Amino acid sequence: QSRGPLRASERPPRRGAPPLPRFSLLAMGAPCGGAASAIKEARAESDDAAEAATAAAAPALREGAPKRDASLSDAGIARCHFDAGLTERFEMLPQRRKRLAIRLVGTLLPIVYVWSLPLLSGVRFAERCKTYPNCAWLNGLSVSYFIDNSEATGAMAAVFFYPCLHLWLNVGEVPGSAWAYRSLLFAQASFGLLLCRTTRKHFRMHCIAVAAFSVGFLVHYVVMLQYCVSTRKVVYRCLVLTSCVAMVVLCALVVVMCVDGKFLPDHCPYLFWAVECVALSSMAIAPMVWYPSVDARLELERMTCPV
Image (cartoon, helix red, strand yellow):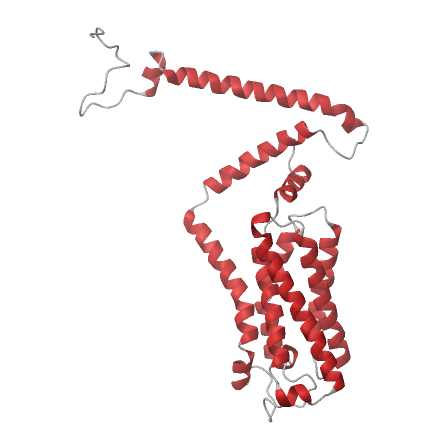
């Protein structure tokens, strides 16, 4: 059926002809004008809803209630999500790849370092005895023995800089947890004491620092487990369990060392060092795997985002 002549806005553009400008479509009553008016109405309604929520929550805020109204918190959270979405959307892909590469290198450095300590002792960078590997130590070889000089100790502090930094960044995502801060502060101080007090000069103090370091980091990882997102919680839990099992094995080796001081150096001198490397490797990977859950992010946004 013939419909008669088409209007100017309904005609398909000719080949080679430039498209109609936007202002001409708006002037002719095209659907763009309706969409713009609908957007304005939606924004006005959202502003009215935010004002109504603010008025409803005002009495509770005056009384000093510890919790704010849910609708009021959602309004502030929605605005913060919008700003964060714009930031992530306009972030360049090369910048993301560069940041991911830095995270991978920073995570792999301590792992490669602790596992290569026997090789570094061959070039006299790490500690090495004359009767290597049968050194006169009750537990055989260990990470503490290999880093018992200035070069290896400084390298140990340098390669573990990024995992420690990432731990503090993760704690910043859960500001409501006091135990997360306390346990990490205790573990960080114990790690510094471990590096300051070497094995040969301060044996007892070094053992105390190692025990405090291990307990502090395990407690911190267990506390942070409840704030981890569900998609990464399985991997994070496996890393924490690996560290716990390694610590239990180390305690059993200490018992063997106390019963028979020559068994480990004579029969398996590398066993104590290998178990320590497993524990330190899982501890270095865990900060990169951890990511805040939805509840943790909402709590952070309620505390930081203006409403």
